Amino acid sequence: MNHLNVIDQIGQQSPKILFQFNLSQNRFDYLSPAFYDIWEMEESLLQEHPQQLLDSVVEDDRPAVERCWQRLLKGDHVDEMVRIEQSGLKRYIRYIAYPIFDSDQRVAALAGIAENVTQQRDFVNYLTEFGQRKNSALEMVAHDLRGPLAVVKSVASLLRQDIQDDKKQELEHYTDIIETACVQCTDLIQDLLSEEHLQSPEVYVNKIRMDISEQIRSVVGFYQKGRLVQQQFVLQLPDDPLMAELDQIKFSQILNNLISNSIKFTPPTGTITIRAYQDVDWAVVEHSDNGIGIPEHLLPQLFERRSNASRKGLNGEKSRGLGLAIVYELVRLQGGTISVESREHEGTRFTIRLPRYAA
Image 1 (cartoon, helix red, strand yellow):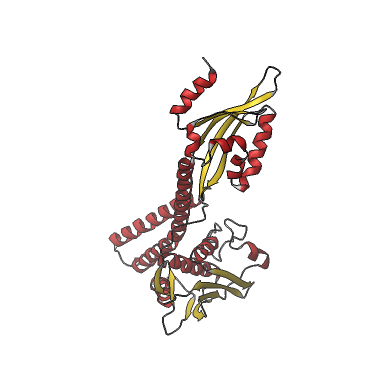
Image 2 (cartoon, rainbow, N blue to C red):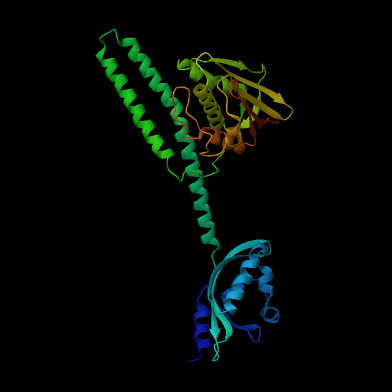
């Protein structure tokens, strides 16, 4: 039985492209019908000008195709994926090709299989993006839970202080439970943050129209009510609403991270100042403190993930180098920018510029 007849019978039934290309005649000895489901080419023109196939390949992928061609001519087989574009539609094509040798062991033809793997590729891309968003969200949520947990732990400590002279054993038992739970949660968060895969760049952003000044008051009020912060807060906010289209949760995360950072590096007698104002099309938030400042050599890497810029706080608090990297990403995701100015022993100021809401 003629081998091309066997190939044709398979090719007529397969969704994959089967082919054999004759090098001496520069034409296809066989090309299965599945080819024409992908490429919009007439058979006669294709046989006359087979280089049209290379023209359909996305320009960035053409060097790879040419390298594969050279490998085949040298007698190696290839397994490659390439992007093609037809009528503005891009597809991913995987092809496996083998050299066919003549009696003198020279490469006389190329044969193999090709298939459209666009759907599989899109699915892999979707899973990758989903995984990145999940990981990034997990990292940010885990990091920012540490602030509220610290509040709970401090309140429990205050309760214990208040009841030391009284014999309210039941309340003391409750405070033990609260403190134990906080320690367990913090340990769990530390484990989550130590995972190397928590490094994805993007998370979902749900923007709403909001008053930046109102949100700042709300976040600062949380710290003041918890009686945790010995530093003085100074708010310099406009009388009129300062409207912006932001993700409210992520904006709160930004403030929490900056405030927590200031508390860590500012003495109890120090001051944390948050100023907000309008600058043409931008809403500007300036967060400053008069703490110990940042050494000049650490400033260039301050917003990098797990950089060498992390330092222990004034009370020995550990730092994993994530907080300011998270702030940078959250600001960027909402279309804004962040910059820092700092001098050792004088303090630090972060300036955030966010797109103002256009009515």
